Length: 247
Length: 319
Image 1 (cartoon, rainbow over the protein chains, first blue to last red):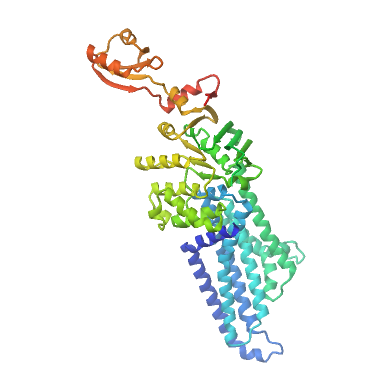
Image 2: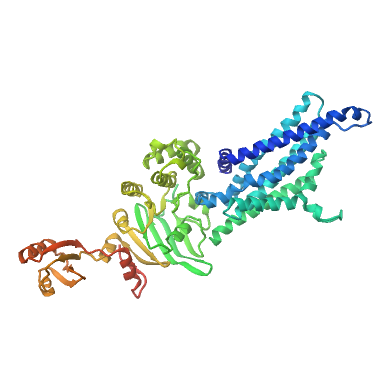
């Protein structure tokens, strides 16, 4: 059932021009960053050889691209997630799902996985872009993998936030703005403090994503993403259930 | 799929619901047997749609119980919803899907076995007259066809109970006739609830009628009982040169005759008297200049007025 709903959402995304536009710009921006980083790397390559333990192409080119990709995702995911529930409410098609023998959890998980499957397309494409460097040199595959895992988790977390925001309203634009606000605040909430021991560091998305770009896959960071995703999916389920109670 | 021990496809008791403290549905009881089409009548805002949303699990009732084919909707929503097909007031259509894709999606979501999905969708398409437009996108279809797609998605999983909220709204007379006969046909062996505010629709399609007014069921009975309420077999007779009332009263078989404004007279017959012919004969013989003779039927509004003025709100008429 979850797969059926996910397939329906994936299809709905692929037939909407907005999703294609977002995908195209995403790819364009990252390809440009990738090329400019590659350019910079080639120009300093000569000096790097002189260093005792020089950073490789993976660290100097791929990791920054993933860093930019994560920020672009923060901007792009709300645009893709905004319609998930809000549009169904507006078109009064939510009844279709609510009258079917489905639990709220199945509906929410289906929509979440449908969007995530879509988001994994650009994530994987960036991975392919990075892997292309292997043609001209040796790559740190471990670092590339940890970058991919990190970006995938960021995409999933943003999708969960966007889905929840979409459950709050019947207006996709309001949903997009809400999702963007929540995501941005979570992304850089750690900037609000100069105290390195502040608990704000514990909730910051950036703080938990950054280790992945250095090749560190820490279970604490994995747990953070799993909890964050779980929290927003649970909130989304509760919100939809409340609809039925409030009417 | 259904519980054969339960002859009722729907048994809702003491359903109540209020929005922001304002009661919208009060203590409503609905029972639908197998093979029965229940007409659900009421003016706009009577609580019909709210009741139907509760019956389909779209809205939780404030109080009361709902059992569908013997399965409690509130305790086991997923199991109970398998037996229900619902067409809301606005058909829930995904405009970017083709008719076939949409119906197959509906079948899968209603847990039709994988290998039967395609045949179930084809069957529903066939029955609702959509065979020719299977590959068209729903968004490009006319309103009448979209309404049919809405009905098709409600029947694709062969539900035991179908709940149709104003299925003929916005259709042209031909389409209305087709949809009505479709509903009758679908009603065989299942339970159907049909909400409408059109009286003739109830009389042509339904076996039993419940009328709602301001959240209360004010009438529950057979279509015959509703007809009796509409003025039974009284006639409205128009005469350009009318005789004194007493002369009309004297026609054999007339129980009561009264002026109904202008040149119109309302004549109630005695039980099993057939008045029409006799009145026409006398009108010609006496030169009353008959220009109209028609059955006197109260409109829906008059019935509502009549029902809501009674002291006891609910009229139970034996089926």
